[in-house]
Length: 442
Image 1 (cartoon, helix red, strand yellow):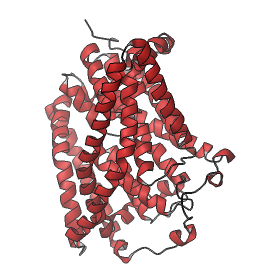
Image 2 (cartoon, one colour):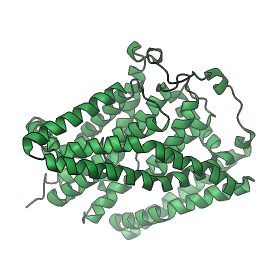
Image 3 (cartoon, rainbow, N blue to C red):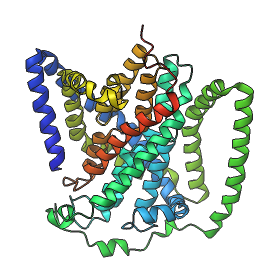
Image 4 (cartoon, helix red, strand yellow):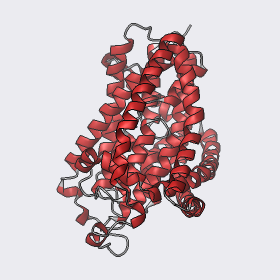
């Protein structure tokens, strides 16, 4: 946590100094109280989402689906997370988190991610100290891994873009490239002696790791081998769905098809997912109501734990923006970045995206309205929005939920993923959108 302390100190002190010289102390003070209030409101809003999805996750765990899914992805996940048993609940929760992120379901991904951190913490032999698996999981999360950048596409469509879906493929390329960078850097730095877990004091009595790892799975999570018979059926269904989608795209046109499919996807997916989970649980003789209530209770207590961390990160981001420090950085770094192909006008997105999701949405809207959604700057900020994640928010929330205060090397690969996201977004946008004007502003 030492590096977060340094970043926190720098942003607070620098924001106050800049505000003093620019005459924005009143704005800074008022913005601080508003940011603290919005942080608490965000935590309250998160209670409903957390209780819902943790309840559903409890049912899903009882059906054995997480174990089945972990077996399907076992080759990849086992290589990445060598310290986590392939059939441990943490593996299933991580897979669900990454799957939800890939589909652009950020609201569903957060509860799954917090559940994964809780389960990973059960394998932690040194309470309060981040494990290698925790660091790697957060590194991948901060890379975004969003195949469908639905939020960014929706914002582009709302401002009248003629090509709102044009960022889907570029965003996917950037986010997976950033994820590869995060994994490589995390695996590299975790071997440094300066980040050895033994160098950090623990919070409480150490957990007997061997006892946790070797503990047998609950009979409720056993999955019959017959579950694999569904794989050919699913494959055939996916092929038919892809063929139908291609037929509709040809009939409606790409833009109309995407608008229709996006609306259907966002409207139907979550309700159908809830129906599927409850139905599967009932079919497996799970007491769905009692199980849901038991899992949902974790949502409220988790959100209460998150409030201090949310207040800290959102207040600091507000100070960074309201003090004029962000504008000063844009003016100072702009001339250096322009020769590299990165327009200075996109720098606010690169700076604020790791800190705030709502802030980056506001910056994206401002850029699209001023420069045009279909300008190069419009495409670039959209790709960064769709392919990057709120790094410091994820770190604060996920580590805060399990009481980890010593995060070892976690911040290094997370920041490497952010830098890679900006660099790759610039390269990919020059490849796909070099023919469009830099700005459409009149």
